[in-house]
Length: 261
Ligand code: ADP
Image (cartoon, rainbow, N blue to C red):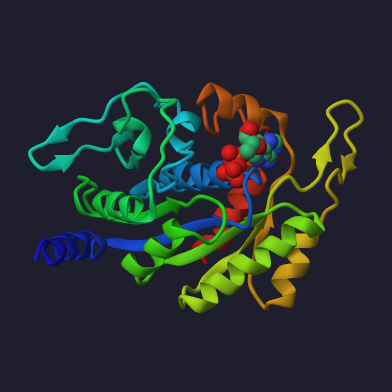
């Protein structure tokens, strides 16, 4: 009975969201959360209403990347008020519900599933053009819950160029195929480094592997993002895109245009 009522709430929210995008990666540390955050901010800058949902309940990082940590989330009646990064960019993360931002979470599958469903049912998102969902790396409970609950969700897969990362991408691709989630495309992050002193491009972790994998699986390749030291400083300072290098901003803009096609 309760589950049915929750299903209804989830469905009535999702009906008012035009595009649902799950950002996945085969493993951690490839920049998935950074890419998800930048996608949300760039889309919002173009005038879209965007929701950014962090379903990584063990290692949430979205709120930190946007400088929102320390803020507690409020409830209004039975609804949780998401962070308003801007009027049209709402953000939800477990971080806002923890007493201490560093609280470790030791939760089993069913609890995580319950929390993710609650993020969809009980958050005051309002109508959205895009819901960007940042999942933890891999193919565990969280992306599975999203696949089962947000049935028209599409995936974006983030990888780095090395062979070892690409082996994990194949698992993400297979996961999407198994749960019937269409893949919008692959993004290659940390792809080359433009040296600030000599201006040359150095392929530190090689380059082009993501594009090759996309071609192999006949998936769209959405673009590359370089290694940009500003990404780290911006992320650590919670400033998102403000201080990205112009080269990175251009590349990100290109990815967003590919996505909007
Ligand atoms: P994931 O979500 O895949 O675990 P994060 O987005 O948390 O990865 O990024 C991991 C670290 O790498 C962060 O410190 C982030 O600032 C850094 N990072 C991500 N993308 C880039 C990039 N293009 N250039 C430089 N550093 C990056």
